[in-house]
Length: 200
Image 1 (cartoon, rainbow, N blue to C red):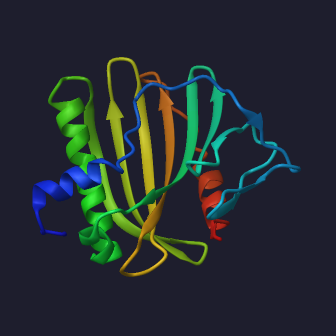
Image 2 (image 1 turned 60 degrees about the vertical axis):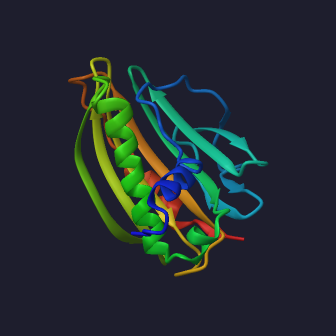
């Protein structure tokens, strides 16, 4: 873990942390078909699963893509985005150090903002590494249960270099359903898209 100026590091990481709410959202955006499944952002590209009920929302300026599939009452999402590291301590750190701090902070935020405030319970937190396609990702999985929803989530972080990164890429997969409703997993479709991930 990066120890320089610990509290400052937390605030710096908090500025790039993307926190996902438990609630699902309506399916909006453009349907992904064979003709538009290759999504290109300024610094990365992905091939999304076509004709599988996914709808895309994108923000090219923020390099942000959200794919949503909804079959009431269940919502699935894939989210892809780029994070820029602006501080020298983070840029100089290794990819693993930044990934460890990012994942640790995300767990801390969920505990402080959700668990301790009685909004939801957090369980099954697993932190690891995984090779998808030909790239190594730093991963985290967890389950959140609130009175209104259960969410299974996976996060994959990719760093172009082992050290001295000025940015990294994050990918999230979510299954959100009412408590007691078992959601079919489409994680293989997420991993298929992630295997096609290419830094431009």
